[in-house]
Image (spheres, rainbow, N blue to C red):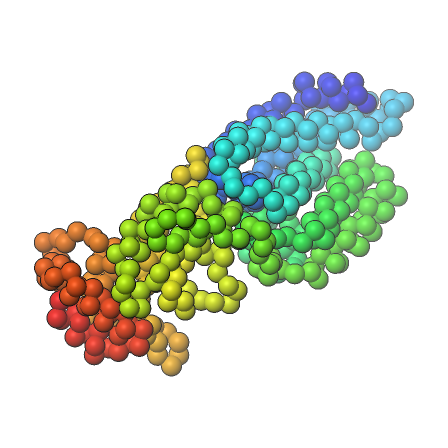
Amino acid sequence: MKRTLGVELRRGTAPLAAAAMLCAGVWMLAVHPDDWAGRWAGLANYLRMSLLILCALMIAAGAWQSGRERRRDIDELIASTPRPGWQPLVAAWLAVTVAGTAGLLVAFAGAGALVVRVATYAGGGWWWTLLVGVLALATAAAVGVLVGRLVPLRVAAPIAGLATYLGLAIVTYWDGTSAAWLSPVYGGWAVYSLVPGRVTALQAAWLVALTVLLLAAAARQRRAALLAGGLAVAVAVPITTGPGAYRLPADPAAVELVCTSSGPQVCLSRINAFLIDDVAAVVQPILARLDGISGAPRRAADQAAQPAGQSIGRDDETVWLNLDFQSTALGGLASRKSLRADFRQVTRARCEDPSGVREIDQRLYQTDTLATRWMLDEAATADNEALARLRALPEPAQRSWFAAYLDAAHRCDTPALIRLGEQS
């Protein structure tokens, strides 16, 4: 079997599978570096997200590899050899699995070299998330092998790959349910979430059992297929009754706050702490501008560390920063504009009608916008006379105006908000 595997790795579909997976991995990593840069957990989660496309490629490769003998009408000749009939099939599956996985891991190793330079948190069991992703590639190749054995047509490989992509895409819409754990594709949990070890172990067992079932069915090994099928069902039951992806607890070590030692306080979770210098350079000038104004926030903190159940805007002392997609491939801040936009929670008027919908009034919106532009120290333009008039006031008067605005916005005092907008 070792000799057969070597031949398959050199001359079969395996080299093409390795090249395809390498190219796909590089492309997917380049498209959304903000999903994985600077965080080991983010990189592992992104591999799982990429399985939507990668599993489709592996199934297509497995189907093409497995269907060769029947397309060439040599399957009966191979079956007549003295070696067990399952050996060529397993060798074909193993070749595609090893080559495809190796190609993908080369791409992700390059991304890992960028992450290791800046990452500030390496815990959270992200390697188990990565391992389940690798097992999923082996399972996908086994699906392809079975398809290739059942349907030897050349079109079977691309059709199977496309069907897999569509099927996994549909399952992603169920990511809030427990049954979504049966899919290997990333379920949308945050990089700082802690996936229970029991769930990961069950996922791994489910994928191994499913792989054995598929290979046994392709090799017509009925007894092995029945045993593997029973194990797959036994594992699937506790998976589907476990917690959903959106109910996962936060990893306490990942969300532990790391704060600046000078200037207005800026605190980021440990998993995002590699961004603290870049974030502080944007946030501290705004906090310094607000220093001493009644009702204004005193610090900025990572939203990842926000207490469970607390909504944005309920803490007047803190501005919560969303850093989930705020990293470049090299570990820098992706968007200063988005970070500054998080301060809109400070000036947002908390006006709601009995149905819970925020009221919208054009005059309130104009005053809201004026307060936000003053807070962010934006330059006055020719078409924004209100900001120019506000800037023309002495500095103490400007700060008093902003304090009055915060008070009125907090109470949703509509007449006062309109009056402030007209006074500026």
